[in-house]
Image (cartoon, rainbow, N blue to C red; front, side, top):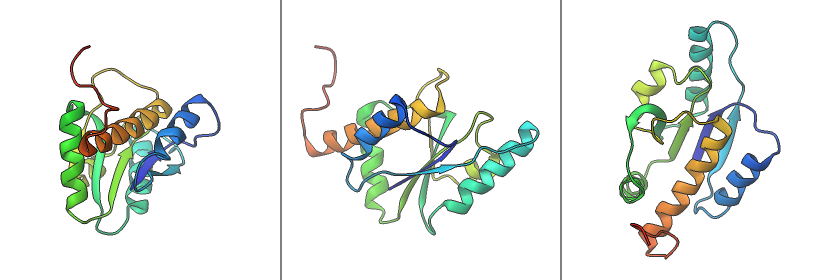
Length: 151
C-alpha cells in the first residue's frame, strides 16, 4: 500500500503521528513524498500531477483525496478499503499539494474520497489518512479500537 503525497515531510509531530499509524497497517503504508511544483497554479498542478502519476505502481488502484470526493464514515471507508484490497491490484492513495490535484490524476483515480469540507494541512492529512486506514483494518478484523456511535 502506497501514499503518494506532494510535499517533503521532514521531522515533526505530524510526521511522527503518520509513522505511528503507518507502522500498524498491514501491509505497511509506504509514504512517497514528492516535490512541490513551481510556476503558476495551473503549472504547479500539472507538474505535481505528472509526478504523482509517474510514481503510481503499474496497474494500481488509485484513491485520490480531494475535497470534492465522497466523504464516507469510518465503517463506509472500511467497506471500501476491503473491496479495494480484494481486487488484487496494488493500492495507492494520492494527496495533492496546495493547488489540489490535477484533472488527469482525478480522471485516473478509481475512487475519490474526502476527509470533509474543512481545509487541512497536507502533513496532517497524511496522518489522518493513515489513522483511518488503521481504523478500517481494525473494523474489518472486529478489533475494539473503533467505537461506533457515542458512548
